[in-house]
Amino acid sequence: MLLIYRLFGRVAFSVMLTPVMIYYYLTHSVAREASKQYQQLLTPLLSQKQQTNLGSIKHFMHFADMILDKLLVWMGKFGTDNIVFETPTVVDGIKSSGKGAIIIVSHLGNIEVCNALRQKMAQVRLTILVNTHNAEKFNSLMKRLGSDNQAELMQVNDFSPATAMLLSERINAGDLIVIAGDRTPNQPGRISEVEFLGKTASLPQGAFILASLLQCPVYLIFCLKQKQKYHVYVELFSEKLVFVRKLRAQQLDAVVQKYANRLEYYCIKAPLQWFNFFPFWQKVNTTNQADKSQH
Image (tube, rainbow, N blue to C red):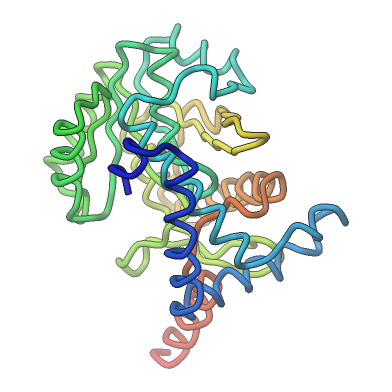
């Protein structure tokens, strides 16, 4: 697909990608039903105009359009003309502070555009924590493509003391640690049940536990495509997360709920750009039933 783009441009890329996404839509019932469930929960929160633009096939096609943009970002082909920083003072504050920070992203919009922070902070290195064995392959791909990005994907299936020490060193050096806050991990007990789009959902605590360990500022980034440009919203979530041992569970739940509220706010701004094609709320029901059977 990347070769098609290089030879024939974006229109040809989109034409070739369309049947691929239609096939995926027709054959992957789990993703299709997850998209429908998400939109059903979101609909009451939207304006009448937004509601008329919904549709699962549209949801899939928005995702298809995002695929090329992701590649272009990592290849350094996405210029400042394509990006609007809606909160420039917050970005300038990160730069002027010289401090390292945790950046919490989500599967809303284009996660990879967080790499555009380098255009504002040229010397800042991004370390992106991922739960996939493809991290090394991706880093190798970027080198082969000639990407000059200052971002590195780090595999973090098991968060060991050595990993914590490495991340602490990077924070002290002024680096930014990027981690997703809306994908539930496999480890039990590392989630909070919160209200999201009017229904109980399970969200991970990992990003917030990490922030409390590293004792650094925490920011949220949401990058939404609006009128063919990416609008980047950067928010200060907390100067420092501190949990009291006796109240740790309740405080963690409150922090994750605060994050869920912000994710919901931006989902309403861009309804078809939350690309989480999994039975998000169903997992909670399954977990609850398992807990009840154990008791």
